[in-house]
Length: 305
Image 1 (cartoon, rainbow, N blue to C red):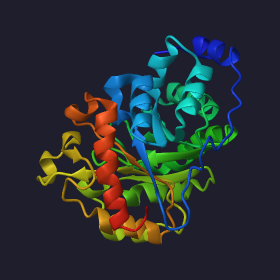
Image 2 (image 1 turned 90 degrees about the horizontal axis):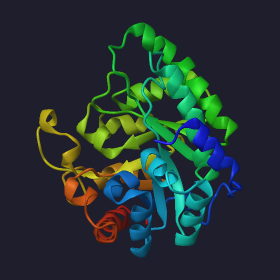
Image 3 (image 1 turned 180 degrees about the horizontal axis):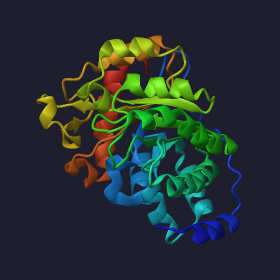
Image 4 (image 1 turned 90 degrees about the vertical axis):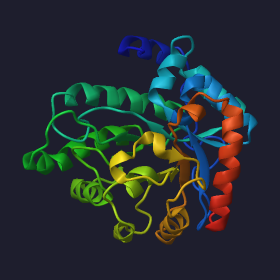
């Protein structure tokens, strides 16, 4: 992993003025949505390999991964990453950063805040305008922790705002802290900061304790981003990331969810994030060709493409 000193050196060595919107707009026209690919889906190919394969398949929008970027920076710099995206005609719509205790007071929080600032700086330089971190903590959570969460969110939001980034909390179905859409919305609204927005991962939403009716709680235009996948039919207790499948290959009510999000004014990216080993380790071009074909069919059926 690149350290802070090396990051500063690579940053200073390259001009970092990329337009905030990149080569394409990061939202679709009203009533429509964008299809994107999350780098977790082709993580075995690395930062460069995933992007090159997806570009060949006609993918235009991508979601970047902090660990894959670190691997790229071991032999290149941020200017090289920016140029790669531009040369391939790819627009980064979001960036993934996993930092424990970012949204809650805890033993990892101070180091996570320092890493958050570094990541905001990095990804803003690459043209990203949204960044997220999942709700991760490794300790038991108390009512006092929930009471302190809005202040913790505001602090992270202020940092993101310094880089003109919208930051997002990803609730996780197994999180000890924020495991449902309603929990995430409650603390986000209590934080009352313009740079913090909710996002939805279809897997965590549909396989967890959230309900379809919870989507009605979203304010028009409030939702900032989505992770897009289908789900195999299995007991909730047995479901894990390996049960995520390509949109259209499972049993989740994707059409209903997408249409409801459209009603709520969402016109951002549906970013396909999968962890099945045959996809993660597969050829990024071949994998993304199949994902694009099936995902676009789902989106057309929901009238958002």
